[in-house]
Image 1: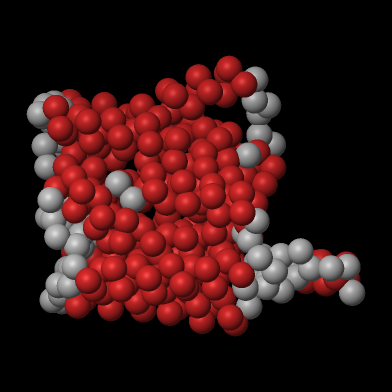
Image 2: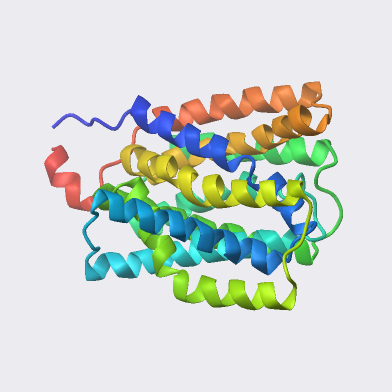
Length: 305
């Protein structure tokens, strides 16, 4: 049988890229929101708001209930992307900057690829790991050279490391589920699964520190709720399901550069020649990861003969 996985489907790349663009504003928006609102409220309140949208979406589409095995995987997704990543990035960005937080995005594709092997049974070839590793090195080199990352490890870095570990796990589990449930229903059910945790924490955080802030803080919070926590995952999980978790996950190598681009366009920050050079290297590496031929899974080896 002919191997059809030599390149990633264009539809998967498009969906994954849409997710990356949506997520590229998450760290700047979080930094703005936690500058005025309680970080626990920002992390869990946006999940509650997104869950309300998710409930309406599932009701309107008449989505069937997940199976028992799918509920277990949905709990893992909720732990990773609904609770874990938002909480630990919110805590990190109280003192850290969104530019420093770009390290999270630089490391996330590698972590996602590891979980794709451990949880989804994917087997990326050596060429994939070399291309992905080169992209990671390019991003980290740019961040260090530009002064974005410097000094010794701090509590902020610890929060970021926990965030990427949980997020990578949530991406891998969600990518597997999306093969059966679809990208939209996967994040919708995960948001509802998390409600017994997100609602009480949101209420306690709001009672302890009543949410008050300027309009810009609420605009940032609205973006995190509607786009980062909800709509962005529609495209992202669909892309992971169609193109492979490890390979589509490498599209996020471009996210740190996109984040800096948003900073230039929206905040007037300067993007130098080094950023353009890093972007060119990263895009080349992303193309190579998408064109790498994936080895068949052990269960499928006989079918490939």
